[in-house]
Length: 194
Image (cartoon, rainbow, N blue to C red):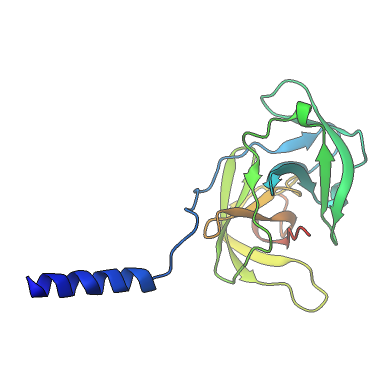
């Protein structure tokens, strides 16, 4: 019996010294990106501290207030509002919440800890394109560089969300790829909300 209590005490001590996780990974969601009628590129919506925002890359254009966006398979259009955050080639925008449901907004955690070797997913039109982070921004570069083994058609995908499997959060916005038709590498700007 004494051995049992010693074992139980050791187990309690081991449990109390272990790292505890405050949230469970949600898995990689399937996500239908949002598109402009006449411009290439995509937008996505995300939840940050209980408020829902749109994100896109600046080089896409079409991010002026009152721009209307469409979501495949959905009725109506999303009406874009004012810019609330700006980075090198990334915008975060308000939108009319009556024009887009918040139920499938991607989760976002402030200051994501992106690391070389992280498995990431480019989410676009309900596809999940797997890639790996190979270089973090350095010097005057603002993009995280990724590589993937399976070529994918990247034309018109600027603005797609980059999702971290490890962190369970959207971490950036796709901006570049090495090919429009068979990309095996690219770059994204980390989403760094204030």
